[in-house]
Length: 122
Image 1 (cartoon, rainbow, N blue to C red):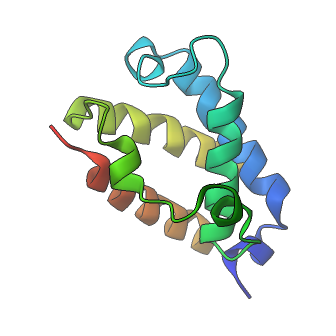
Image 2 (cartoon, rainbow, N blue to C red; image 1 turned 180 degrees about the vertical axis):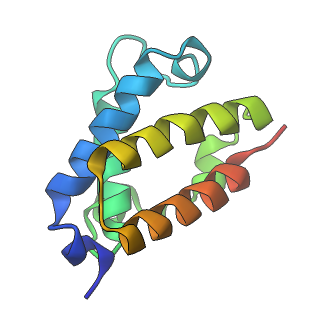
């Protein structure tokens, strides 16, 4: 069974991403990295689709946007250790709020820690 199936499908990822972006919206240093000046809806949707696909769900992200190319997509933004840590703080809070089973929590947190470090470019 995929992690996507274990968490019950897209609703889990949508709620996780919504909680994450609540933190981002209240964090001026991270909010400034998002090109949408007034609305994070696009970013929310893209991240939820990406995570769902990554963890075994439908390939909607790839169908709409092609290969994720995460480093390339994040390259225009100055992401230093502080921004990485802020990002992780909000994502960890979102995972905690979702309260998934221990093995799911561990997999998510490991992935997010590795991914956040991979996006650091300063």
